[in-house]
Image 1: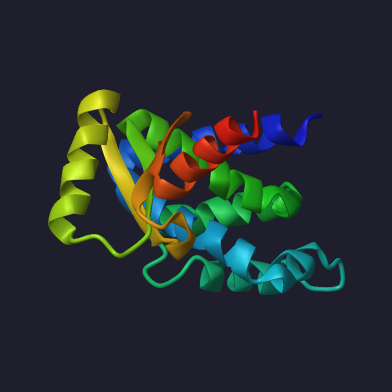
Image 2: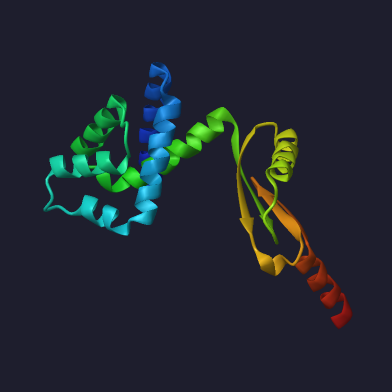
Length: 178
């Protein structure tokens, strides 16, 4: 069976249970933490897949990786995953839960890259612009990249707007080479 199908099924079931209990926001935060820990600590995945480690130790390790304030629903979910020998798919389940939650709540990830740090007021204006166009809530990340020289690059969903001086100079250079 396709691992993507399995992880999405588990994530959907967890989201449904969390919504019934009214703790989907808390579970979202825990699943984000778990997904981040899988990315930042490569040894976590190897340890979870280690057949020599007992299921109880793996469950405790995963609860620790979920962060503080791990709800009982997550503990039950981890026990179910361990019982069904699906712990190797837990990273995918966490990512799928985050994706399903964002889709359900109409949350869009956005990013602004500028040459110099922007003020909070400017960031709020950009965020409002994206929210108006996308008709949803926006989680915004701001980055600085001095190589842009000036201007900005705005990305959200599949949309990308490059209004940087660097891209303008490259366009002029391309025209001059013709």
